Image 1 (cartoon, rainbow, N blue to C red):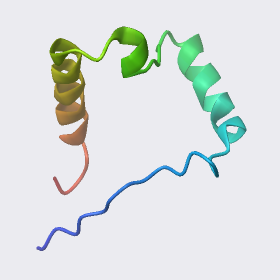
Image 2 (tube, rainbow, N blue to C red; image 1 turned 120 degrees about the horizontal axis):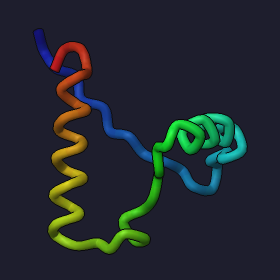
Image 3 (cartoon, one colour; image 1 turned 30 degrees about the vertical axis):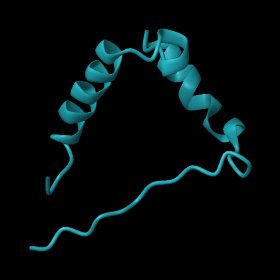
Image 4 (tube, rainbow, N blue to C red; image 1 turned 180 degrees about the vertical axis):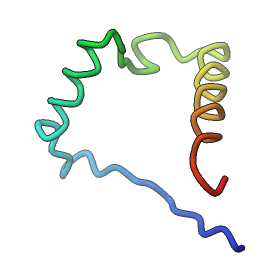
Amino acid sequence: MAVEWVRLKLDLDAFDDARFEPYLQRCRQTGIELTTMAAVGDTAEHRRALYDLNKTCSADIPGR
């Protein structure tokens, strides 16, 4: 089976963040904290942690 790759892009000018507010609130209520690389510090250690998190989560996607 051939893998079809998709490039994801986020248009910040057209992004409707209000639509995602209920999901953000639910995350916060369950103890999930969302942040940015700028807030935690864009270091090699944090980039590696983000890579490891993405690798772990990606393994859960069917067909991978």
